[in-house]
Structure formats: C-alpha cells, structure tokens
Length: 283
Image (cartoon, rainbow, N blue to C red; front, side):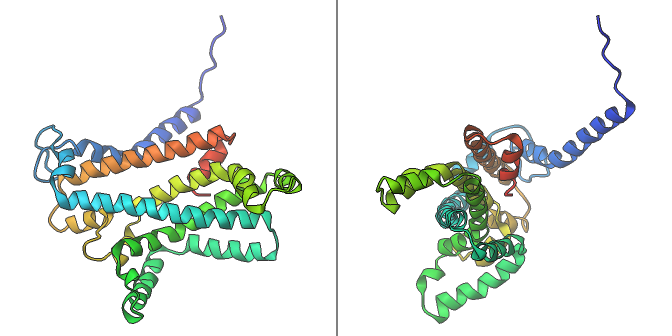
C-alpha cells in the first residue's frame, strides 16, 4: 500500500489563501442572496424568512417597469451589437489589409474608454440630435439606452467573430463560389454557420453587459424609461429595501444562465477551457 506524499506547508498556505480570496470576492453576493429572503422594511434589518420580496416584482409597478426596461433594452442592444459586430468581424477576417489594424485600434479605443467619458459625451449628443435637430427618435428613452449600451458590445462581438474566423481557412467559401453560389448564399450557408458559436456568445455577453450598465444608463435615461440599475441608485436615498436584493438575485440568476449558455455553445464548438474563459471575459 503506497503512502500519499505529505503536502508542503506552502501548498496548504496557498490553498487557504485561495479560499479566503474566494470568500472575500463572493461574500457580498451571498449576503444579497440571503437578504432577498428578508421580510422586513429595510435590507439591513432582518425580520424573518419569506418570499414576499420576490412577489414585489409583480406587486409594485415601478419595480416591474424598471426590470422590464432593463431586459427589453438588453435584448435590443444585444441584437444591434450582434448584427453590427458580426458584420465587422467577418469583414476583418475575410478582407485583411492595413485598414483592419486601424479599425481594431478604433474598437480598442471604444473598449478602453471609461464609461463615464462615454456617458458625458452621449448626453449632449443625444440632446443635440433630439432637440436641436428635431429628431424625436433620440428623445425616446429606449432608443437612448440601446445606443449607449451597444457601443461597447459591438467591439466585444467584433473581437469574438474575427478571432473565430481568422483561425479557419476560407476554403469552404471558395468552394461555394466555385459551385456558382451567390455571395449572399455563401454567407448564409457557409460563413455564418462557421461564425455562429462566436455570434451566439457575443449576443449573450452583450445582453449581460447591458443589464449592469449603470453609468451610461444614469446619464442617457429619461423619465418613464428608468432601467433597473438607475432605479437602485435612486432607492439609496430612502434606504434599500429587501425587494432590491430579491430582484438583484433574479438578475444574477439570469446572468449566470446566459454565461452558462455561452460556455455550453463554445464547448460544443470545440473551444478549450482557456478559450472559453477568455471569451467570457470579453477577450
């Protein structure tokens, strides 16, 4: 019978340190989840266990409308970002040239620009388009939120789609052209299926990024179209209530489901664990 080798004190110390770091990172989330079952007036004051906080999503129109606006905006922004980002990624992968590096530089600029800078820039621009030029479309709160939320997401989808197609040869597309398929049919039957895992991953990531986009939403939202993050910020003035934690828990579950779908799609496409982690990190 072989004896298992004793672990060194450094291995034990690193394991303990890793557990402490994980607790430090996830303890606030666990507190919010537990607090969502609090039946009381304030979040910080525990009364007793119950599900009344979750029922507030149906009972209170303000909460219901804020959540619906966030979900609606996230879905539309994800669609816009997916369409634009997919076309940009395919163009960069299949038509390489000097322009690609300039375009990648612009996308990188969009990715690294602080959200507060984007928000400060978007607000007067929306006002100029909506009021000074009389384009009423830009006075709509949903339109403003979709434009603001899709800015960063377009860059993310472009990166993913380009990375997906760059590693694959264009032989299938050339063969389709040799068989007299039209460019549109080649795109629909060959190019798009090759890029589809990255397209789906980009859509889901764009949706999750939109749900927690607080800074831009606080600047560009108008009365009657308040998304959930802005509603939470305004609730700080009167004290956070347990229903805030309950709805936040629901949003967390939606985010985890979306990220799980991203991992599943990429795993089915043959990506390694490292590639999946890089994709889910927006890299």
